[in-house]
Image 1: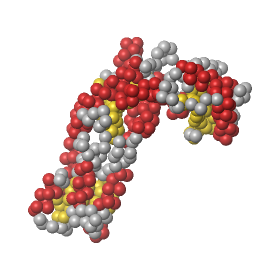
Image 2: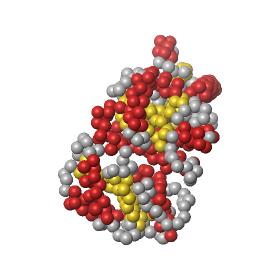
Image 3: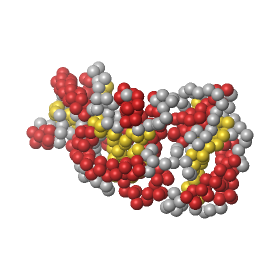
Image 4: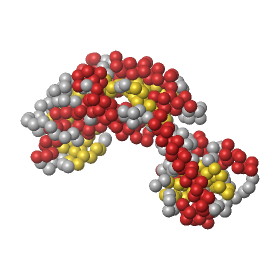
Length: 456
């Protein structure tokens, strides 16, 4: 059922309009322009009936606000007015109103005009969707992203353009055929939509190349660099621990994703400018081992960003722990053993009703050059010593990369896990004795039959 928002400061008018429309449409009412704008943040209607003459904020002022927001500017608006002033009517139509209905209104005329407008806009949207959608993934296409970025006006406060490339997709096509390759693309599109949500717009540019645009500020939320980093990590985790399940067990290579990010307007304004610079940032990720993200304007901070952007996060571990068990036999832990570690935890949970804690330790270097070999070796050796001297026989630990360690604590409460993590922190500080190196940790508490994330 289509949804209509009616905005009028007179209660009698609202009741009359609701009575006319309630059998055919879902109706929401607002008694002021400011209240209407607040309601729009929660839900976007299919049409707005907007009174022209209201105290505080007139219908024209509300219309101006709608035209300034990309989320709202395409909502069809019908002005309600008690006046017969032709100049006012012309003004409303020039502002973008679909129609003008005079009060007191005739019920049949109002319903007929609204029906006609909604049918027309619905058909227009269908045709627009066909022209703007990628046929395989049902994402928006390159043309849509080009038009979007090139038409955004200067009042827009900027945003982040993310260029994503699937690593090893050609190998998938060559080895298993394009049917499997297309399945990977379709499922990755689902992961992208899930991770980005309402934050931005997701497009497939072509082949294995995707793009996301996230406005820095909209009526729904504000997005800063740290939020964009989290979204990027979610994309990386999704492709690694969901899409790779589509590949045969014997496959000796994996799909991953590399992300290059350009910032609008700092790096450019048009699609071509943002694409070019995001592509350079993407190339940087490819040249440094793939599977990561990089901001173009951070190129001068290569060593620091490279380490930060390659850190594993608990989202990846969370996805792993929820995977269906497919292997049997003893758990094996090695350098690449995140999957086996998490499955080991899953098996423990199946056998006993016990809490299990997963702790991810990360070493941070206060200096810019976090990739310095001596500092990295000193830090990870100290962490390994602190971990090995703090764990019980039934616990499991594994090194992840150059600056991280993951620890599994079966049959341990969240509080006990926290005590163990703090003990490891203290031992690390004592062993390393370096003010530049600090140890942080995140902990995931996993109970039988349910998972709960608690970050410290």
